[in-house]
Image 1: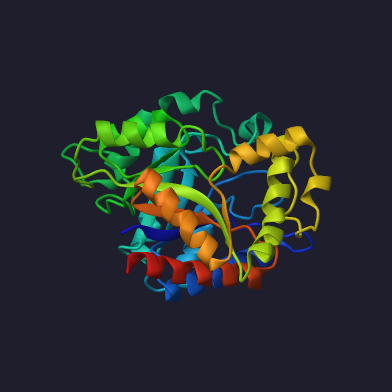
Image 2: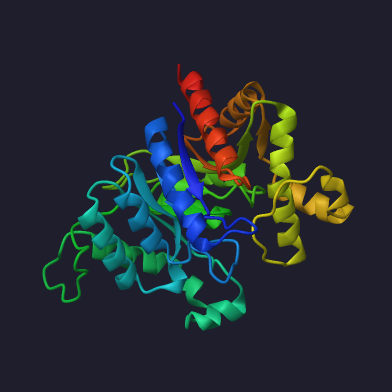
Amino acid sequence: MTQLSILDLAQVSLGSTPSDALRNTLDLAQHAERWGYTRYWLAEHHNMVGIASAATSVAIGYVAGGTKTIRVGAGGIMLPNHSPLVIAEQFGTLDALYPGRIDLGLGRAPGTDQRTLRALRRDPNAADTFPQDVLELQALLGPLQAGQFVQAVPGTGSEVPLWILGSSTFGAQLGAMLGLPYAFASHFAPDSLLQALQAYRAGFKPSRQLQAPYAMAGVNIVVADTDAEARYLFTSVQQTFANLVRGTRLQLPPPIDDIAAYWTPAEQAQAGRMLTYAIMGSPDTVREGLKSFIDRTGVDELMVVTSIYEHKARLRSYELLAEIGKSLRE
């Protein structure tokens, strides 16, 4: 039974502010809780005018404080940007405030460009020690050991669930070796999805946290009452990916009638490849697309990204998707 969850980039729509984006984030999380979504994650990005979740742990606390039962977490924290002790303290604090509801997904990419990485005062080679940093963080969140001098307060003994995030077989192999759940970023980097899932399942070793492999995949989904309306709303996503190809960071644009006029054939091809697994359409169309994706990947959970310019339409998409999820589980 595949679970449905939400990855919210706290996107700032053109003409709005980060305050608007974060208020919409909380409103969506409250609706998602009522609609039965499993978890609600926010992601770390820096120096991006269209994303308001740079202070990820702060945003997670805001969402967790405004909800009651839904799991809330990071999808993810880019660990090379931080010391493991600081992250253990931050998420230990979140767990102390909202016990049993906090997830900590970990990625090894910087979540930004090289100049911004230098502004973060981090070593550009910090990603090379990602496996060791994960182990250090895991130990800081685990039980206090005899002779352990440095501990996270709060954090020690909380055992906040860790996830390994990735878009290649590296993360899959690490997640398998450590016996942790694994989430693949197929919502923007789909190329190695099937290979990574196979590597993760084949190499999985049971751990104290997890006895059997548990895999999640990110998917861009837009649901509307008709296929035509969904395709129209999805042009905001297509423009965003075209902008990524161009190397520009802009706020989430409104939908347009003619996407072909916005991008070049080369941009369309590159953005289209990144959106290989995107699903958009009416409830019937999306239901079939979801069934096909789940049958192909066998994932245990879908982490859904829905980037729609108008908040009301985004709420409607997630509401329809929740109904689709229930019908697939029946």
